[in-house]
Image (cartoon, helix red, strand yellow):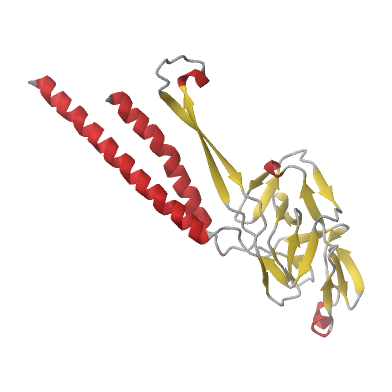
Length: 246
């Protein structure tokens, strides 16, 4: 019975972790550029750890997290500084911790004319920070962004957005809801024609709220069943101990 309690507890742990992942996905269903997290669970038996167990009882679980980088839908905003990328690319932004990468193109201008994201981090161009000259006259000007990321004011180019692709997205780890950090030495591809910038739109979260709610409901039911099993085993152990005292 003790082994049964350990097995039930082992099965419940990854479910708790998955609940946290789903809850975070649901919390970011409306976060621009958010990529949903996924949890992969591998049940390990004793032989994996170098032990042998003819019964194959569970010795633990291996839980790994991943990110679903599939594209979210595009939402029209009409704001000329809102941008989205179709393809595998990421915008590059300067943060206090170094360059980070994002799919969220909700940009604005800082007082000095620098293009910044929602957190105030400067957006990188291929030649440095993208900066708009004469922002006091910008309302009378036309800002246009080409598919290549070239930024123009009244057809005069002022810079080109730095769009970065990764041959292997597993080198990216989440630093916040929409910012990613690349592993040292990660292979980055720049200037690829496979990524196109769209102006006046934003990429929405790729979280399917209905799908996540269904998964949460099913998981909660399964977790409740496990709790009942665990409680029944615990009661059995208690009764056995009582009998032993007689």
